[in-house]
Image (spheres, rainbow, N blue to C red):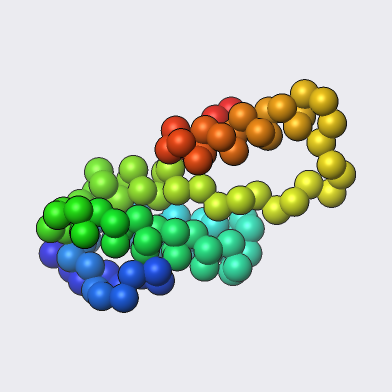
Length: 107
């Protein structure tokens, strides 16, 4: 086990080496696609989720758990340059509701 430190969680987290690598890859991909600020927000959300899992009794974070966290923790997309109309607004609202209910990314 490795000790991983993430934003949003104050203490080092026992993590498998593969899970730590997955998180680093996801952060790097987010940083490359969307910038440093988005990567920091993602790391904070992941840290909060890890904290919740540890408080719930999970002793460490393995690959499957890390995959479920990084695949389904969503950071908001940057605002659209033009407001969505009609069906676009409906799809955006459905995505937001699904995300809030923990269903991950839709579409």
